[in-house]
Length: 322
Image 1 (cartoon, helix red, strand yellow):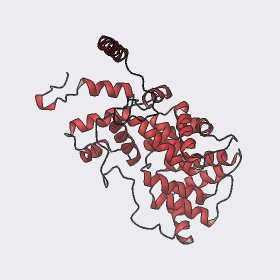
Image 2: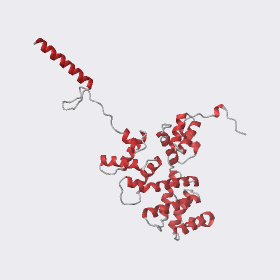
Image 3: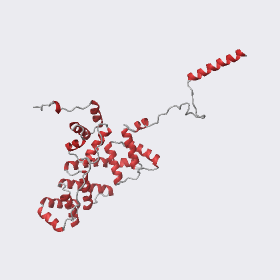
Image 4: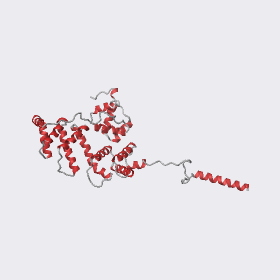
């Protein structure tokens, strides 16, 4: 039996808002918009209602702001990345040995990572792993996904298909995931899907901004590439922003190109053709005070005819007087 909908339990959405959400194709934006409607436009309540990690929530808010359907989240909102309150403990060898004897789950994880990385763990390796497990409290599945991600990224960056990263590198990435709120299997899988999208576009974007020798993006470049992929900028639009940047700056400048792309998005430009059509300055005729003696000003046909008639009349008058 369907649930009874009372009048105060019905949400209304304008047709214009619905069209914008459908055309944008942003599922997270649509869900956030519904949460905002349910919470009376209160961004904090909507954020708590969704239980999303900060990065995902901020991205959805930015999408709605670009559609002029919501304001970006305020500073200090629940959408901000998590901050760890204390420094990680310095585990002693005795504590690590006791953890292996006491916690069968951790011992199984330790053996599995030794197998995956192809090495016998040192005390420092074991300490890094226990920091992920105990201090960051990441689930086993998340630690395994994290390890696989770091292996893939390091092999891609180094162009070495057999490279095996060290545990301190995996621990650093684990702290980054925790700050971003990537601390559940669902959030980790979503994060990895987004990273795969960035991977698939990385070289195309680097080529669009003038990189000629194939290589992996450095960290700051990848941050901008991730923003551009999430925003849906095409390679052609990025190329046009690169050309404008080089024209203004003399070389590629990632922050400057990013500002150009953001300004086009705010203006509603999604293709190079829209930019070229809409980004041209409007030309107007100068008024009488602005005209200079050397200006090539062409009067209208009506004015030419009027002047000719006046001249004919003047000449007739002159001949009559003569």
